[in-house]
Length: 382
Figure 1 (cartoon, rainbow, N blue to C red):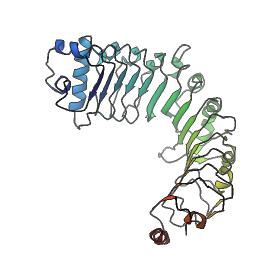
Figure 2 (cartoon, rainbow, N blue to C red; figure 1 turned 90 degrees about the vertical axis):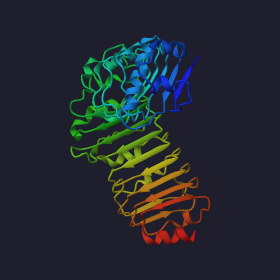
Figure 3 (spheres, rainbow, N blue to C red; figure 1 turned 180 degrees about the horizontal axis):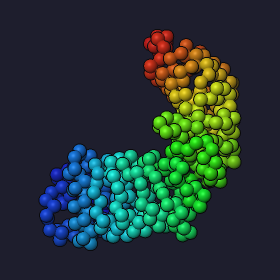
Figure 4 (cartoon, rainbow, N blue to C red; figure 1 turned 180 degrees about the vertical axis):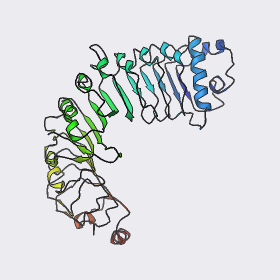
């Protein structure tokens, strides 16, 4: 009796013919093997329509034979467009449904019948609209969407729905049609949030107000884009009261740059991209006592000089500077960034030289990409 089923496309596996063989095989032949399966993981990464068809026929045949009814985990990540049968609604014990990177276009209309489902992952799919009835799934804890997924009719969310249980909401697309008041703001227990917003600054007030109340947030990822899918403007309030926040990712022009000095001490990982900061952010960020990973990506800083003062960044281990096209000089005092071991600099073509303090650190792992010629000479000498 199989309890945990994995499909590795191995013809020697007893399940290979049942999954990939003749779909006309008698349903009765699967019952003795799959009656007590609790997890099914597919590693079929073949191209074309066959993987999706195989999944559909296998699941349909098993469920109609009263098999897989104890299934708790169904993970089809990287399986090309698995065709989920409507019978999937009979998997009453299913807790985890993983469809990441499957290029799936649509979810089964009966998805809301999976009342035990706790995690739904449709990241990196082609699903652009979620069924509104998804909010009837009262046990749903983690929802991973694909950054372009709209959720409309938010006023259908009611007391007793997934709004109170949801802890992870990642990949949601928010525009002027998204209802925030009496909609998104009913998600008040979130620990991890990832949004892509396409809103004018004047339209962001409701979203900013909602997020400011999420005091239990541990991870926040916010991308602002304009009508041309280029970085837009981000309205940001002080985050000092978000004492549980450990991971922050911001893509977009910070309308209020002073908020950089109002990040919480709890931050461990910070990524800024497209922020267009005119003042050196290092002088403000170096006081974060727990920061271990810092990424300053394209156009996050538009000034010419970076200064890291002695005693700053006491815990910083990883620093990535990418496409800071105006930076020419970088000064690092003795005693700054003493825990740094991984430094990655890319396409900072005006940067003249690595700071002398860092040149003398023998344990520093340094990666230089698309830099000025003198950097190449220095790297060869060391």
